[in-house]
Image (cartoon, rainbow over all chains, first blue to last red; front, top):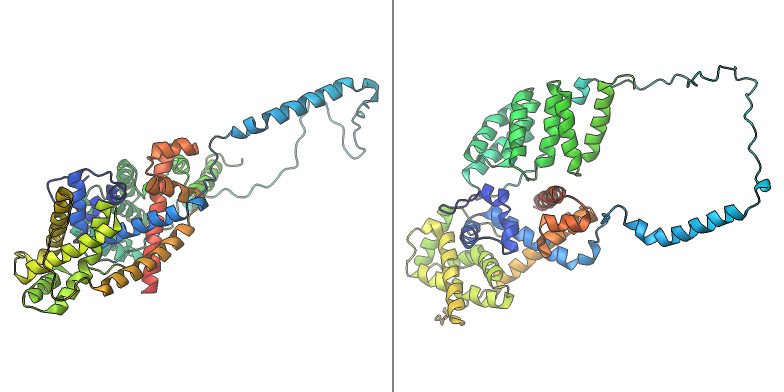
Length: 282
Length: 190
């Protein structure tokens, strides 16, 4: 969070959603002034502001196209169709009541086919044994694909951001171990930088240190809303899987699904696979 | 996409060159800070025409000060321009009229920076359009309600039958995706 007695940093701009609040004129006067002074000296944050302004203009211009598809309430269709359904139900009931019973043919009694062996009536029917696909192993489910990072190389960043970007240059070369010290330094300079904590956790995970990953991803989640919240839950599930903690992984996958984002489908598939690992043969 | 600011040492040299009477340095200063000044004034006044007029006053005032060598920390030129812009705006808000500044001999209104800024704005708008087009309609709707209508996640959640946590997460992810996509597209262009 921005403290009003000093200059604002890029991480405070991002984590505090300062640009969005500035556009909507929701900042306190001191914070607004600090942000303005900051973007007069920072390319990255000025560019971000310009992007948000362009987004605001474009969204306003294309307002008609942004019709929301999500239903307001699940059962609203009931009220639309309820009168028609009621009329139909009454008509069918009256028709059936008026119909002479003798016209209704009785269904034929079931006859065993000649090929079908007779069995005692209390014996359950058994389906032919189906061959289930082999359940994946826990190690397979715990496998991690690194999340993509797209750098924005702009000048004018503060020291924490500079350390972060240096570390992420290593990360992009898949040099996870080399990325860790820089990410640690970046998150130490700014403990509320969700991006640094998230990629630090992922780098631990990719270097086979799931317990350290659990700590850092947990800290990312504890920061609350951030662009990394959903992915932090997902990768935390992976970290739990690497330690064999299925209950912990399941809980994190449920959290991922609840956020209804890009990882939802993958998290659901992983949950299904986990259920098969937990209950083999089903 | 915006004209990037030079590093502080280079800006200090621009200020020194202006004090020494180098007119090309004045153009450089206007090119580097003109857009920031316009944005600041447009955000504060919500009036583009007024912002343009006041923006000229800011630039004239800064250049006159630099010519007289009144900038003490020349590497903090950005902070100085911002301070001047605030003073010009506050004077206008207090008195309801613009300051009478002596016009510079050369016309610093400089059509060129305006045209360049408009070209850059057009480019940015194209990239933003492409970035937004890649979002789902529902996510675009959430951004519209947030950035244009100024609704809070709880209010959007009520409208959409979602929880406010889900709205926050979707908004945050959608913004991140658009910004990343724009950065990627602009890198590919350059």
